[in-house]
Image (tube, rainbow, N blue to C red):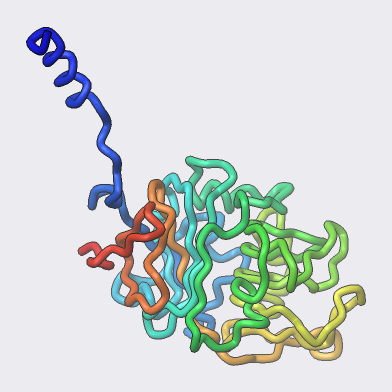
Length: 291
């Protein structure tokens, strides 16, 4: 009896799938840096700058210290996105989102401007970490509010490339034109359906990172006489109507994407263009940078 059942038992053991407790292989378990925003490097990553064209910006040598766009990563199919605020390349705040529609690249997503106003994530942030000593969180456009991630938020003749849909901020109605929505990659006088600045307004209404305007009501036009932005990378505004106030830089903002992993290394990580990740909430990779 034992001799006849043994082969069956062996086949069962050999064919049983192994329970995966480790992250994916080194080839797959990575986050790729698609963009870095430094709001005080002399270059404005506004609504029409690179987002929908994939034009390369910056160099690998300064990928985490200056404005940067990797044209190859921008075309990679991505199922997850991580927005990482960092100080000198060390992260102090992280949010990870799962895309609502899988398999599209950032280039494809940011080209989707007409009609735009897309809620692109599903279920809110699946990972959210802020360092205990992180500063300037309440009016941070990414980490000072909750909700879903939205791309190409256009209203009137204004547009924001990345905003959040949730408590703590304000999303303007389609025809509002009231300068009330703030985020990453902004232009307050443009054609948001094509990504072009309107008329001779170049150098006036663009801003790289605009904060949540905590001191201004959200139901007035204009929302306030002054829009507080991070750093010096913004237009001159228009005195007497609305002007920009140069505020402190809260950090650089790095945008990573991944096809297979949904956990980013914890805050305090020294970043690099390719970072090892995981799908296990209890596992932190020992080698963070994949060389």
